[in-house]
Amino acid sequence: MRIRLFVFIVLFNPVSLFSQNNEIQFRHLDAHLSGYSVKAFVQDYKGFMWIGTSNGLNKYDGNSLTYYMHNATNKNSISNNGIMALYESKDSSLWIATINGLNVYNRSKDNFIQYYYENSKNKNTKINSITDIAEDKDGNIWLATSGGVCIVNRADKTFETFEEYLRIHEKSYSSKMFNVLYQIKNGTFLAGNVLGDIYEFNIEKKNG
Image (tube, rainbow, N blue to C red; front, side, top):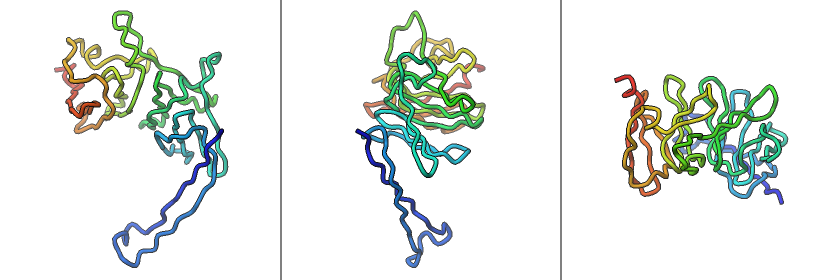
């Protein structure tokens, strides 16, 4: 059963946003999403609206929706239907975080390249459950996951934990289940976990 999407677009003049005479208009768009719960939105550089749900990824072109679903027999499908975050990086790559794996949309083939955490010495499968995506000034993609903060290795199509990237001993956290990232300066992020604690991560220390 597909879910009907109601999108309300607010049209206003930014200059007179706080004016009492400012007229706000609503336009209603009717569409059917693939999942009940909407987790993320992003509009890409081509103008398409991407909507991540609890049961698949949806692309809206202004008239209709295209659905992208996981297919266990197709390695170029999205890695999981549980979408958690969407992000378009500076190089116009569209990143999709799911409860099992990271994905990059391949526009030329209309499919996906899957990224997974792979470390034979670390069996923490929760790391593949990704909750947020961010990017620093140098184009490094950062991930908040249920097993720690990670950095993407684009060449190998994998990602590694912050500690593995810096080649340092694992830090002690109240919980490794992080759900939000925020960059306070280039190379330095704040990450919040499910227990309400915030930690600072500084990638620049690798060269320090």
